[in-house]
Length: 310
Ligand SMILES: Nc1nc2c(ncn2[C@@H]2O[C@H](COP(=O)(O)OP(=O)(O)OP(=O)(O)O)[C@@H](O)[C@H]2O)c(=O)[nH]1
Ligand SMILES: [Mg+2]
Image (cartoon, rainbow, N blue to C red; front, side, top):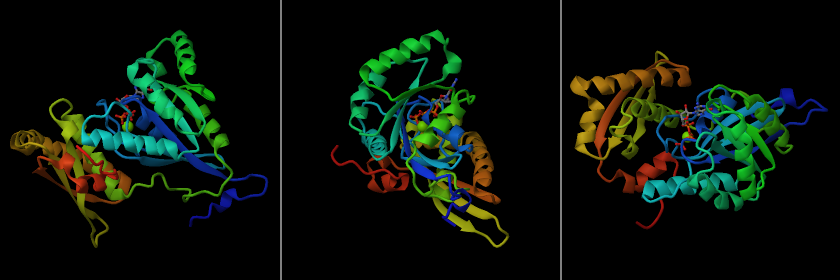
């Protein structure tokens, strides 16, 4: 089932490789990944630092399979969770055949972006510059931005796109396909992500949590799928725990008369059902775990290395 037979026709070599997406928090990396894959495999939010671990999405371009590695936004890390996320992002970039630096064109080359360039230089892979959110800025400003960023690092290619409305994304896809090394495909043709369903399901719930409680809570909260049982009637019984840091946050997540958690559960169930392609019964629990961000077990669940030290 791993054989990509339809594409093994003579004269058309298959290609396959890894392309990493790096950039400051909120640049639109996950939005672009989803756009290229054609399905939501990485969660997106207005809140910076949404993506926590490496998420791989699989895109196709003709006879090429492009394994896109979405990374957490890179920033100056202070807390332990932050350091784990940045380390994860950099490791994603160092293993890739190609690294795309995504820059929010409206924000431009601010400190955060410039601080990222020396880190990027450590990866030997070719680097592409992708200016995103061009739907929000006048065309003229893009050239100056390109020049400025190319002064700091020489990019092999520059693209101007809107990950949100898809502008410029098809051309990027084609170029990505051409840049991948000749290789058999690593995944079956219909696979969209390498994340296990229970992890994707936890991410979906985290996204709904972020959407509903934007300012009130989230950064210090995490979601785990604690059980996934396939039932005789073809449906799944899914249990998830939302970990928060304080009792006050638990009250916020539950909401008056349980209204908030009910809404989160409903929205999450719809998307998990879609992703799982089966009927899903979702049960959410909220637990206070003060120091979850210092607990190695939580990091393993998120697919992150637990950083040593403070
Ligand atoms: N207008 C506009 N908004 C965009 C575009 N791309 C992404 N966004 C928005 O920018 C916000 C952040 O998008 P994400 O894809 O979560 O950004 P990210 O780089 O993955 O962020 P982190 O995971 O936090 O590092 C969301 O509200 C997106 O809808 C774009 O091309 N145009
Ligand atoms: Mg992201």
